[in-house]
Amino acid sequence: MRLTGGRLQPLGCVLALSLMALVLWEIPGAWALDNGLAMTPTMGWLHWERFMCNTDCTEEPDSCISENLFMQMADLMDSDGWKEVGYEYLCIDDCWMAPQRDSKGRLQADPKRFPSGIRHLSNYVHSKGLKLGIYADVGKKTCAGYPGSLGHYDIDAETFADWGVDLLKFDGCHCDTVEQLADGYKHMSLSLNKTGRSIVYSCEWPLYMWPFKKPNYTEIRQYCNHWRNFGDIYDSWQSVKSILDWTSSNQRTLVSAAGPGGWNDPDMLVIGNFGLSWDQQITQMALWAIMAAPLFMSNDLRHISLQAKTLLQNKDVIAINQDPLGKQGYLLRKEDNIEVWERPLSKLAWAVAVVNLQEIGGPRSYTISLASLGQGVACNPACHITELLPVKTKLGFYEWTSFVKTRINPTGTVLLQLKISQTTF
Ligand code: GLA
Image 1 (spheres, rainbow, N blue to C red):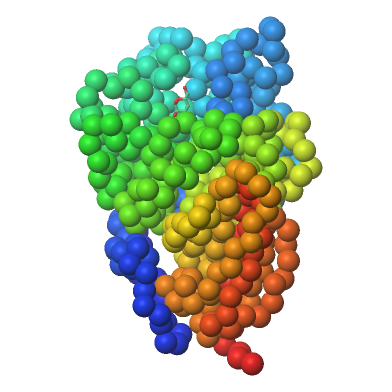
Image 2 (cartoon, rainbow, N blue to C red):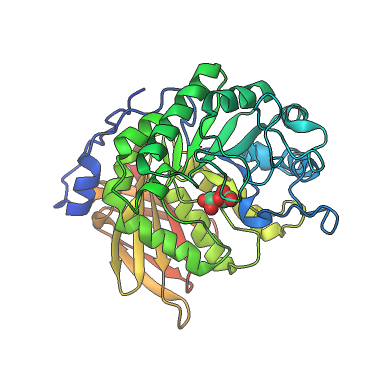
C-alpha cells in the first residue's frame, strides 16, 4: 500500500509558510508493511509499565503475570466501555514464557501462571470481541532473560499463528550486531506474513539501532506496523517530557515515516496510575493524539479513577488520534516555555495542542494568531474552534486574521480542534 499525497489545497491567500512545516509536509510518504493492518494507530492494553515482570503469584496473585490477569482485563475491556471506544488489543509483554522451549522447539507459556495455555487465552479474549497480543525478542533472550527467537523465527511465527495471536511485540535485546538485529526484524516480518494470519507487527528496531547508526525509516516502515524509537516510559512527568522532547527534536525524521499502516510508537499511556498529575495526564492524552501514537494503556482497569477513565475514553480525542488522514503532528513553535503542536486532520480540520511547560506559578495565558497555524490554511478563511481538553467547550467562529486565547495550567495542555468554515461575517 502506498500513502497518498493528501496535500491540502490552500483556501485563500496563504501566509509565508513556516520553514519547519514546509519541510515536514513535502517529504513523500513511504511504502508501508503490506499486511493491511494498523491503518490507524493500534489501540489496546499492554501489561509492561504497570505489572512489569511480576512472576510471584503466591505473594501477589492479583498482579502477577498470569492468565487470570489477562482474563480479568479482557472482561473489563468488554464490560467497561473500553472496547466500544476502540481499545481492542489486549497484549502480553515479557515474562509470560516458561524458561525452556518444549521438546519440539516451540515456545511455551509458564505452566503455573498460564495453566490453560495461550490458545485457551486467545479463545477467551476473542470470545469477548477483543484481540490478543504477545511478546517475543529478536535476539538470544528476551530483555528479562526468557528464551529469545534468534534462529527460531519461522517456528515462533507459526506457533503464534496456531495459538490465534493477533499482534506481536518484538523486542530487540540480546543481539550481537546491528546486522543481526535488522535481519532478525525483517525475517520475523516475513515469517509472520507466511503464516497467513493477520498479525500486527510491533517493533523496537529503531530504538536499538539509534546508538549505532541512524535508522532507515523507509525500510523499517516496509517491515513493521509500528516501531519504538526511544527508551521505556515510566510513570512520571519527567519520562513523558523526555519522550516529547526527543520526538520534537527528531521530528524531521519521524513525522514523514508515519502514516496508515506504520506508526512511530512513543510507548504506553500511563494515565490512571500514580505518577502523573491530572494536568500531566491530559498532556499525555492530547500529545499522543497529536503524535498519531498507538494507544496502549498500561494501567489496572480493576482500579482506575472515573476521571482517568473518562479521559482515556474521550471520543473526541480518540478521533483525533485515529484520524483517517494518518498524518503525524509536530511541534510548530516553542516560546517562553509554551509549546504549540499541530496536526493536520481529514476534511481540512486541524488539531492544535498548547502545552505549558513552566513548572512554577499558576495558569498562563497564551494567544495564538490563527494565520500562523496549519501553514496558514488551518483557519482560512474562517473556522469553528472547539476546546476538547481539559473541558469540551465550543469557543465559536473565528476569522483567519483573528486570535484565539488559551489559558493553560502548569504542565497541562489545551487541545483545540479547528474546522474550516467557508462562511464569513
Ligand atoms: C524492553 C522494552 C519494554 C518491555 C521490556 C520487557 O525494555 O522496551 O517495553 O517490553 O523490555 O522486558
